[in-house]
Image (tube, rainbow, N blue to C red; front, side, top):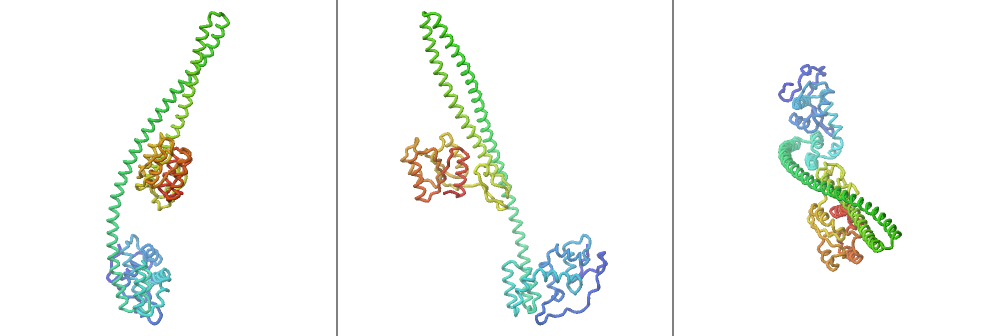
Length: 439
């Protein structure tokens, strides 16, 4: 550790283990006169500490000290500052390096202060610069100005002294705010964990539903095999009937009975085939809806835990990217903020899924099937009560479509038109409502 010396006197260079600099001249500081600006070593001793501490960043000061060969091994920031203040007392290579760097860094501010003709004008420029946050620039330009008198320099010294106290208080406030943010972060992590657990339970339920659908499919496959066996049996019966008809006329009654059984078997076969086709279609629709629901659930979970700067987790579902970057760091889950969303049309079996998605985003859900089952006269009432409308155009009557289109156009109410009735289409529509990107 380099010893601290009174009045910030520079340490003798041999003590640092470096080559000694030329002995500085012992001439007294030259007072500023006319338009000549003051040099660093011509400032008052009490001004060196705030100038070096405020106007020269520590990393820059270390580089200058290394160039001047006065930077000792393991020198602390305070020791470096003390040595720099001491060397600033007289003109020497280190002081000249600091003088050149200060002039280069704050040249624009120096030019702005140059027209000032008295101490009041300098102080006025100083206060304007402090208000805009240019403290270091203005401090060097003001104290080295040729018209900066003792009174003005002392007023600026008082201001910079109080600024240092305010900076310390601001630092403490930042520390307190950091502690508060850490507590809030812990609470948010706990809430996120709870949401993840809830999402995991929901995913497990969907897996169970998928297993049930698989078992139903297996049963349908068994039924299809039985139908094929029944068809083979029908062919055999037809052949047997032909044999009986050619063998004995006395077997006519039996042949007729077998024919009736054949017709009945064909009817059962046709009904079974229609049932198989209907169940197969329902199974495919259920599979697509299950996949869409799982994607929507995963999208919400990803959105809850997405770090700042990532792409929006809904991009896989809504088909677009959210505005991100680091303010996005601040990209957030879309919210409905209590707005009432009316869904017109859609599949009856998915209405509860629509409702859960809207309520999960903080909205209120209302539904009208577009005149297929619900009374069309009720549509006016639910349209008036809604804040936004999602219209699944392929699942409603023409009269209901034109009625809601005219109402939304006349009232300026947001309305999203969807071609499909699946969960993924509804997620895209509700995202547009939440973000305001609607017609």
